[in-house]
Image (cartoon, rainbow, N blue to C red; front, side, top):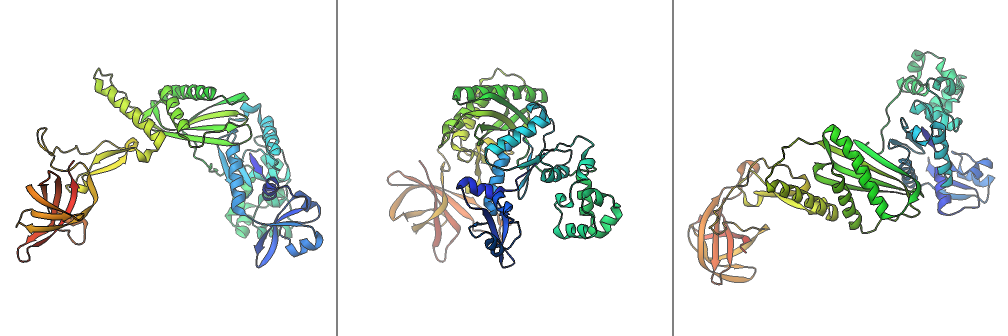
Length: 504
């Protein structure tokens, strides 16, 4: 199905602020202002697209002129496309003023193709949008029919007969190509189709011949939906719009139950789900959640969406109610069968995973982090923080660095960037007896070390200096983790010292 909005720009302006005088949209073309769009009232007065603005003002002195805003037109087209999702999730943009809908297998939900087409046109007209629509077996045939035979439906195999009578302008070819056809006396698509393909390719190229084939239903080119199609989808249409939140929650759980049966048959679970709420006035709200593990439990899905709704800073406004709620699974993964265990830790793991999902839904996936070990001996790179929901199984285990009865060898939290320390009374190959850090002088009472760590020279052009780490305790009992950058220089008796962490 093709939807063409010939007055998209002027409809957008008229909806924002009613205009009494004829309205045109102007844009700069070759250092001259020309009309890029005109309202129906302006067209009745003889104003056409491409006309110089000065000539238009001469014909209609009280003309209302607004400069073109292609970005605003595109946003309106995307908004209409989002509204069209209630008819089919396969909606593609066809800029600057058209949409393409793949309604295969969806027409019966609305009582047939004619009923669906009429319902769509009527609903758009209520939104004060002028639309021309047509339905055909190929996207190019539907586009051509929408421009010259509004409301036409081409049955399978009838595309060539219906399109052949249309003017050559309906193919939306390059103006130079259209003009060349006109000069050759070929005014309709059927007349152009009467020429051999070799003649068309030799004169105009393969692109024109391919466009003609698609318009006549002989070939088709896949269209790309504006939103990737989900793996699975379930929806519920209401006879009367609903506003009760309990009904909405019950509907989400029922849809999740329907998807659970399908996912169970396929041996899969959802990793990402999206709920779309279609309001009766045309607005669409979308909420998405992610899970750390594949799931198909309807109660978990309903609980996560409740958390998402409760966490919204601006709660959803049902307005006059939702007439359609859709639950889709954009991402699904295989669930491997597992034997039921009587070990309580298995249940603990599931509860922790569910807690992570709830926290991620409420606060955001990037704010719930987990530590992951790295295969390196550099202290600040020994562990990385990753989103807890996306943390893969560690390829290397955590290394035990102390026994249960030993004091920590390293602080739990290290500084993001080591801080310089002024060392005094330094011992050769040992720690300083005194040091100043953050303008405070500390007297060293006890020290342990050194723990020498060589940097990864193969990752740098110039090898970083070796580090000698010491655990030191001052007279007040505060414990620090210091290191010397480089080997102790006995001639100068001076070294660079840094504070890397503080023990709790």
